[in-house]
Length: 197
Image 1 (cartoon, rainbow, N blue to C red):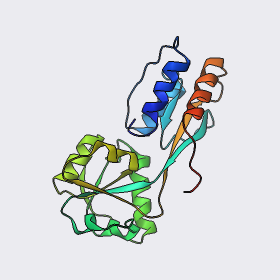
Image 2: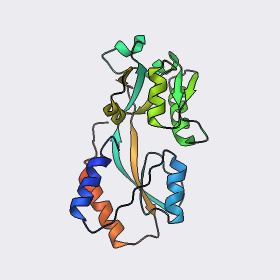
Image 3: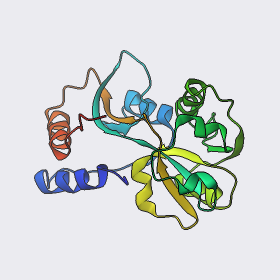
Image 4: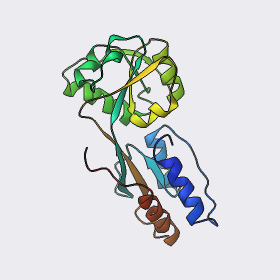
């Protein structure tokens, strides 16, 4: 919502004014995919969709990952993107694995690629809680760059070199609804996928 989705929803309201949009927020990728599979939701916008042949996915947006640091930490003063090895220089504030296993695993995988052993400083179940824990000095959080728009006092964002995350549109493969197709087309026109990452 902090990135392209807010503007895209505005475009949907303008182009399809008679469509009743009902939004359901979730920070759990498995929960979002399951809601689509069960028919509770027609479409999900999510980072890490469940791998299931009954789900169709389409890359919608790519954005860099950013290291959100306590404002006074030495890593917060760098002007260049932080190297992946920075993940070994400060404890990490993560989503609990049972809440968002794929998100958790994505960050742990980044640590392995950097050949560092992650230290977990704290866990939070919402973006606001994670950023509050960062501001309180529990560690740094790796999140999509669009979260910098929240401008949390006591937190300094620094791009994480060579990283990116994707947002996907996710729907059931057997859903042939013309309205769903139209919604996807409007969403795709709402943003241009950057090619330089």
